[in-house]
Amino acid sequence: MIQIIPSMAISEGKVVKTVSGHVEELKVYEKNPLDLAMEFEDNGLKHLHLIDIDGANRRKVTNYNILDTIRKYTKLEIDFTGGVTSDGDVRTVFEFGAKTLTVATVAIQDPEKFKSWLVSYGNSRIILAADSLNGVVRTGGWQRTSGVDLYEHLNYYQERGIRFVKATEIGRDGTLAGPNFELYKDLINRYPDLKFFACGGIRSTADIEELDKLGVHGIIFGKAFYEGLVKLADFKKFL
Image (cartoon, rainbow, N blue to C red; front, side, top):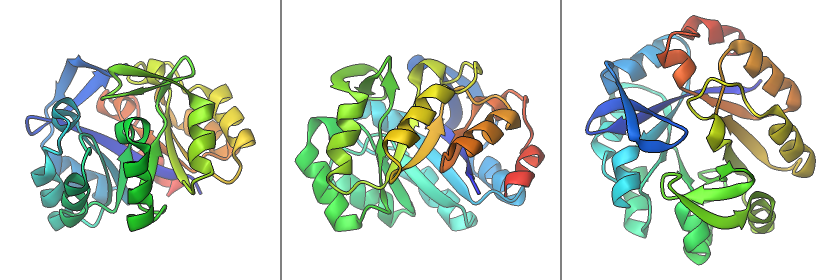
């Protein structure tokens, strides 16, 4: 069964959402992070994708206190991302309660360091973020193009043992325009041994059903819930 994973982006202690990755266009939601996490858990969700927007901007893990609070008061399995650039950042994230860590920038800028994390923590705890726009991987909170082709990126890390990949179609993120089904179909056909998390554009449970049919391992949703297009109760058939 496909995993259903809500995303929660944090900036200055508040829950926010970006549009197509533009951090200067943050929309603040009137939800306390812990209350929201407990709401997810109360509705049967088991996972949370926690995004440190401030960390991504500062290139250093910043909102670990939010991670720690959610870990202490819920049983959610938390995947953390944003601002992880050093060995110390990785230790902080895991010490404060993350189950997994999703990494984008370091995988591009310092492959040796990223590979060392894979060895040290295992490929079940380190997730590769292969977030792309028009087939080119972007990093730095999606603000910078890497010039690296998405498929070359995946080829390289598949050969080095990566198992889980978050693949965001950046142009769809926060737009409610629907996922790029053709992209995920192609990824799954090319890389049957990788487990993909789809992110970007999800607007309804019908989208999730279609992604499930394609063989996507999990979906990460945000705006459709925050904007009231889907309710948490709608996800129960997938749980």
